[in-house]
Amino acid sequence: MCSGERFGKSNERFALFFTQGALDKLSREELSGVVGHEFSHAFHQDVALNLRIFSLIFGFMSISFIGEIILESIDNRTRSSWKNNTKSSAIFAIFALSFYALGALGALCANLIQAAISRQKESLADATSVQYTHNPNAILRALQTIAQEGSPKELQGFLHNKLAKPYAHMFFLQGFKGTLATHPPINKRIKALESIAHRALQ
Image (tube, rainbow, N blue to C red):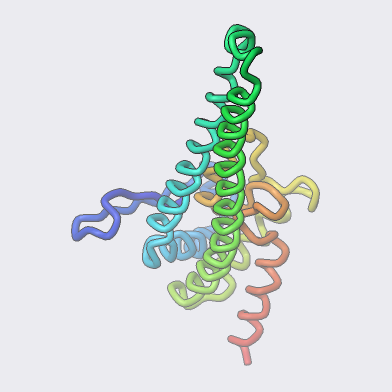
């Protein structure tokens, strides 16, 4: 994964992180492809973009959370004090539900946007890695090695903890499947890189 600090400033810094599994299983050539992929994220300021989108998602989630707090505040004692004023109670509940729905809908839309952008950025990083290394097979063989570590249904790298999903865009592999997936399927990435390698040989 790629991370950093002070994005967009003259003293910005980036750091690349590698798991021990990657260091143990990938060859020097394959690791160079992964380095090129992650450095592409740094060069194209993908980390800063993801942080901005994540802040947007957090803002919408906060709005939803406020609505949830308001709804929970309508406890038995509050409802009993409003038993003679159902109109006020209904208005208060509608207000809270509106906050909750607005936040939830906004967070969902922001997540969809983040996932779509992230998938495009991952494909771009794969292609840029080829330009950095001048070796189409480096990143291709890295993905092929990872894909061979398990069956298609048991590919390594999938996140099993739901709390980790907001950070799936930071990693090298697809964290989870579905419309909110932040990475293209590994087999699709391999096919795209095979096409690039084939063109390079012509």
